[in-house]
Amino acid sequence: MEPMFTPALHRQRHQFVIDFVKRKKPKKVLDLGCCECVLLKQLKFHREIELLVGLDIDGVQIKKKMHGLAPISTDYLQPSYDQLRIELYQGSVTEKDARLRGFDLVTSIELIEHLTLADVELFSEVVFGYLTPEAVIVSTPNSDFNPFLPGLVGFRHIDHKFEWTRAEFKSWAMKVCLQYGYEVELTGVGQAPPGQRERVGFCSQIGVFHRLGGKEHYNMFDEDAEDVFPYTLLYSIIYPSLHDNNILRRVLMCEVVYWAEKLKRRWIAEETGERDDTDDLCQAEGEGGECFRASERHVDPEETQTAACGAEMKTLVDQEEEDGELFWRRSKPDSDKWRRRVSVPLAVLWCCCPKVSVLSGSVSNLRLLLMDEPGVKLSQDGSAMLLDHQEQDLDDDDDDDDEEEHRADLEDSPYAQARQCPPSAEPEEDWEADV
Ligand code: SAH
Image 1 (cartoon, rainbow, N blue to C red):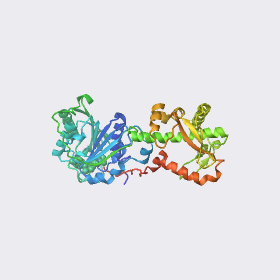
Image 2: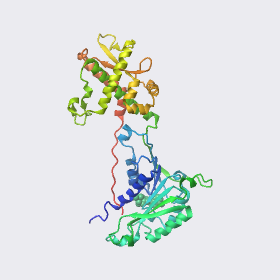
Image 3: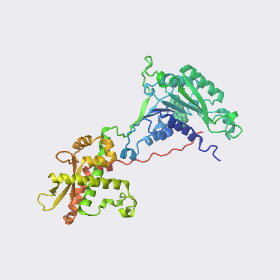
Image 4: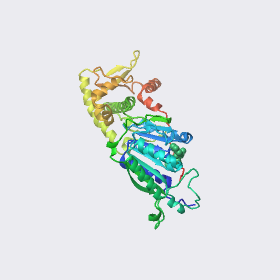
């Protein structure tokens, strides 16, 4: 049978909520009757949301797919400043729970028709009278539309206790507005066939409620309100964010090590007149191992930036050399081989890499942060990072030792920490239909 709606009706209902979120940018969103968390999984990508909560009476449904709400590997590898906490509760919308107060948006998509009419009264009191969110979106079947649903006998779902006509929904919505101080706009999704739209309305009718007086008339701290917590918390996750100091340090360290290494190589290449091997754009191992030489590809802005900074670094380093700064050291006490130690001034690092400057704020902050990092060596006055470099031409027969040392170095480095982040599977998309 041809699908009656394109996109499917359940997707249109969720898209209605997402469009509202895009326009109004609520920070705290609560989805009542969240079921298998399909809507929540879409909302979590709207990072203006800081708190996303789902509630359903059926804990089994919640548990089925709740792990799809967990952060994915990119959330760990490239965290942003956005903050997001997700919580899922088992409980009934007919009961008050103080943890659900103070939300900017509460959604109730195809839920109220699963309640008895007595429970709908309780729902109104809990949602509009106790939770008092700034906005509420309620969707429910429009029974005026039912004659257009092929083969439908009775209600659209076996668990529905009622299905309201447009007049019945309007009457309930107006009563709620008068009683609890809201205004409502009635609309819907799922268009009727042309020529019938005025007469039957939308397949799913939707009320968008706004609290009168907006944020000012918010009675969250109503002295008489009960502080009760009957719901059971089933799931809670905090997304990685750069507001978390440990995460900020980790990301900053990855950037610092990457750029310091890049600058070191650039500087050495300029000193020795050799080609900088890192200028070959070798895609990460496992991505097909494709390599291009610098001359074979377009100019990479990052490379141009490194080149400019490399020149700046050369000037600074030359000055330091004149001042007698340590620049070479023996690689091993019993060896006559020499290991080069390159000094990368923090000021150059800070200027070169926008992410380093944004994350650290200032060169002195950067110095303070690096001083506490066990894997980082700073110069005596703390103005530069010292990086080891083995002279290739002096050391050809010592490759195995080097490799081992290099591997050991990597294990301690922030790179290693990043590599150790467990890759988690992408959340599955759930397209189950629900008319
Ligand atoms: N909102 C979801 C699913 C709607 S189905 C969607 O858009 O796809 C209705 C959901 O409401 C079911 O998951 C059911 O378990 C839940 N429900 C029914 N009575 C409830 C109650 N009293 N409190 C909370 N959830 C309830």
